[in-house]
Length: 233
Image (cartoon, rainbow, N blue to C red; front, top):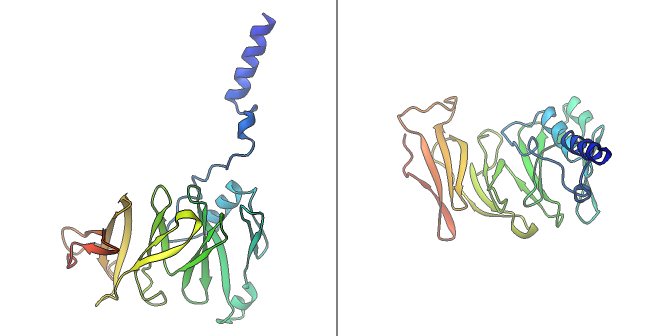
């Protein structure tokens, strides 16, 4: 009877999370919220990342600190005073906006006086890569597509494909400059060679002027191409 009671207590404790298996001691915390990357990086997004990755990431005031797998420290220092003083040259604000656990890559959103960018940081190697748009990773994390809809302060290319394989970060393809501004919306990766998108005329509020604004980025040899081409409007 006593043995049965002890078994019931143990089962109850496991069910309520009060007892954890020894193998869980070094596991990575859940990053489900931190994985939900979008075109914005509000304070609550970084708060979720700081909470879920608290053993490796911290913020003290204007200083964001990230500990890499090697134990080395990478820091990002805001200059809020420059922003308040309209010092456009030095105004900068960093926010941790996502982490991909499969490839172990952080995405740090960087806001300037005008415009913004994203820096990818490999926890494995410390390698970094600056993007003008928000990255969306394949499920295995080996590849990403970056979308830049800021035609006022963004980069020269509105679409880019990059690799995060083996802890290295690189751009593999960028779109040619468009004849007219356009906006893209990421839908999903079909597989590692196909990206489903929506495409809209600029300043349309991402409303489709025709029956179908679906588009696909398709790997073609060593490069990528947009299909259908020409675009539907």
